[in-house]
Image (cartoon, rainbow, N blue to C red; front, top):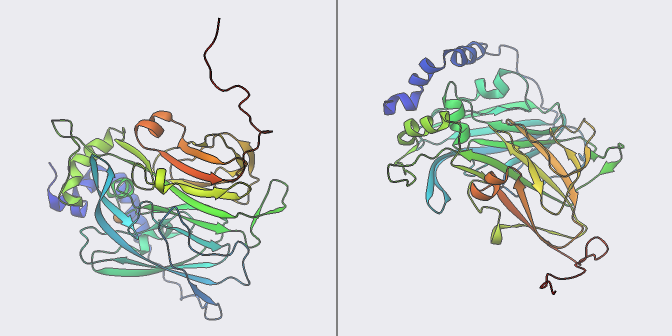
Length: 372
Ligand SMILES: [Cu+2]
């Protein structure tokens, strides 16, 4: 049985996973010693992050030379209701699951102030898959409750990339499956290009973060509810190690993007859907629609796939799909493991307005009784 202290500081975890802990420590020991970069000639811009599926204001084509783009993110530990009968002791970037989508252009500098408020219990950090060196910034950003830090990195590669908390040992998967994962989109300076290299733009962008949760049940079959994150750790870890999630959801809870919370679009609008999964593979599918252009691995230097029915999101990555809606209606956007979509929660809705096109589809005879 793990003590609360062991859960807090990862002591038991270090013993359980010596290789991971050693690897992390080796990197952490390499403190950068070079002189600070002089970026005083660069313009700065502050971006205010917004909760997914929405995305902060940004230009698709970079308006000038590379800039320093400033973001500020508090880490929030809080209980989150993830279904009618289930609660998660969540750990979040900026208070949302997933963390907010950050948008910059290639060769911009991302300058993040990461804040771990004193009321939190856990040390946290951030590993940007878009960044180079020092565990993606993880080795330079470990903050205990009551601390903050500023990390700057140059976004050299265009694409959609995951960021996540990675504080060492078994704390890494636990923090990720507790919600500490988000994404950054690094746009090419001239914006996106299609399969022929021609410019392509989007009318709307939505960010869908898929998370799986491992919420244990009690002897009566009810989901257990815990006092705080540390209290939740031993039982949750046991459930995690079974690798069978209790919930697979988009944007933090069952129904977060369905019904009244559906994403909206109009016929003729091109919608970019960024989809991340920090820990586990997924296979997004838009029922009744397609992916016109899909950067399945999310990296915009690669030629996008066309006309996809379902695309694959590798665990630990974010992909992007562009689709022009051609018919009105409610579209379900699902993880096409349909057990996960329907029974475990991984369904979102798009509500699309506009005129129906009978050339694309028409009900020739409505369902009726067979006579004779
Ligand atoms: Cu964390």
